[in-house]
Length: 98
Image (cartoon, rainbow, N blue to C red; front, side, top):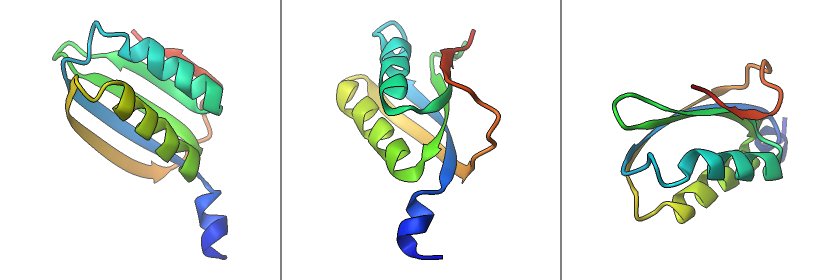
């Protein structure tokens, strides 16, 4: 398998964003960006004031998704914890979780 083929493989990340990320449109922006890039998964607010995101797509698309989120909310994100893994294939579309 060539390097370029690996970049096209479906991946998943599970991320937690902390800071002042709730109440600033983070979830709806994440949903809009995900739908534009054809990323599947979900986003939700947590009771500890973090936002959790699970997303699946090709790796380069996921990197673009993360970059756009970080640019849009650079004033609000204080920390992020991202765990990469193989895609599960169980998501269709991108939605808000509660």
